[in-house]
Length: 29
Image 1: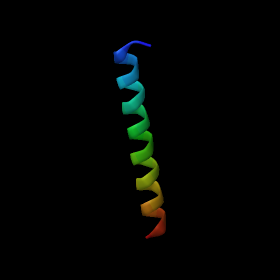
Image 2: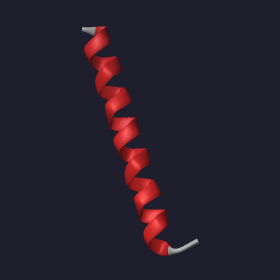
Image 3: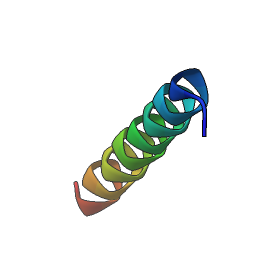
């Protein structure tokens, strides 16, 4: 697997986690 693809996959994962955490924290308020 090329290094660039790995970095892109990691960035997508981070974005997804951040958005999920944001939705959950807004829902808890």
